[in-house]
Each structure stands twice: as C-alpha cells, then as structure tokens.
Image (cartoon, rainbow, N blue to C red):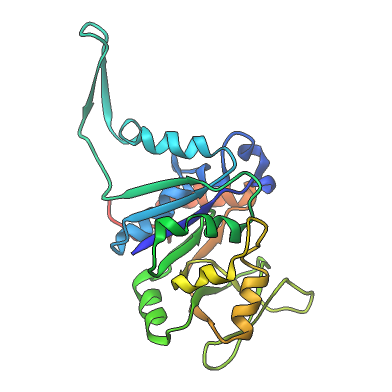
Length: 259
C-alpha cells in the first residue's frame, strides 16, 4: 500500500531553515523529518512512497539520489580514475517517487496531481512535518472496517489546527478552523484515503482541508481514528529544537523502529 507524503509547502513559520530547504527536509538527528516519518511507516511494512514536492523540490530529489552517501562510509580514490567505493551499503526497502506538484499548488491540488502514481487503490496520506507513534496497522484496520472514504487521525494537543467534531460512532461531523472556545482535538494527519477521494479534488487551487473535508464530513464519509499517544508537528524553531533534544537524549517517542 502506497504512502503519499505532502512535502511541497514553503514552511514560512520556520524560516530560519526553510529558506534553504523544504520544511520536511529540516533535520532531526542529522536526518530529515521526512525520513523519520518514512521510517515509522516502514516499521509497519509500508515501503512505497510518493512525495508531493514543490518548494525547492530539487533538494528532496538530490537527497534521495545520494542516499548511499548519507548513510554509508565512502572512499574516494583519486589515484584510480576518481573511483568511489561505498562501504557497508545500507539501503532501506523503499521505493520512492518524488513528484514536482508545483510551487504554489494547494494541498488538494498536490494530491490530485499524483493520482496516476497511486492508481485505483487506497493509500495513506501524511503531512511531511509531524512525527508520531500512531499505530499504522491499527489505523489501517479501522479504516477497512468502517468502509468510508477517508480516515484521519485525531489527536489531543495544545496546538490548534483544523478542529474536528466527532460523534459517538466516530463520524467526523464537522471540520473547521479553530475558534476561541474550541477544545483540543485536532487533525493530526496520518490519513487513509480510498481512491474516491480524487472525485473531491477539482484543481491546483483546491485546499484539501477545506471544501473536500467539509463535504466528506457532511456526507458521513469522514471517520476519526483517535490517537492518544505522542504527536508533534514542527512548525517553529522551538518545536524543532524540542524534537532534536528528544532524539539526542534517546527519548524520541516516535522512534518505533530498530536501528
């Protein structure tokens, strides 16, 4: 099952680093946060990724093109015709497709553009700027059981993003922007989408979190999978430093994989 990663935004709220690279390529422990997200999915056997790139998309392509150089010892032998020898080659079991989905394309438009790479099958959809220890297997099982178009993971945190209203049967009945009196259940990403989702995406200007989500909620086609564990986005330098500290102290809750 394919995993679609949204990695095309500007990341203007963490401009200290995003002026040089896309936000998903900002590093935690010398690895892009995108790599951390992919490692979690891979832990659950999900090894085929489609990355929706945009802003500075060449940085993502070049990083994966040189993955061996980032993860292995290398000898450059200039005495033998400029030969490069890669030692202890470590390769993930990944198939990665990086798609330039446009510089100013909205989230829904980016998803629409990768339809041909997904095909007529369900897929995971995740933002490239948050780490979590969501149980991917349980999320997928929940999605298959209810049979609706989209499942998104809801989390209880202090940051106020898109606010969810959920009834007793886990139907998401409303999806809207934060208001002053709202609680703290938000969209944490980590979604599963059936291929019918493409019917709700009109153009590059479509913002996935607005009209498509609202229509899905109104039709009863949007379910919430509650995650009570760790989830943290990386919108600011402070959040980046916090995640970096967790990693350095070997107290990173999202590291569910073995080295």
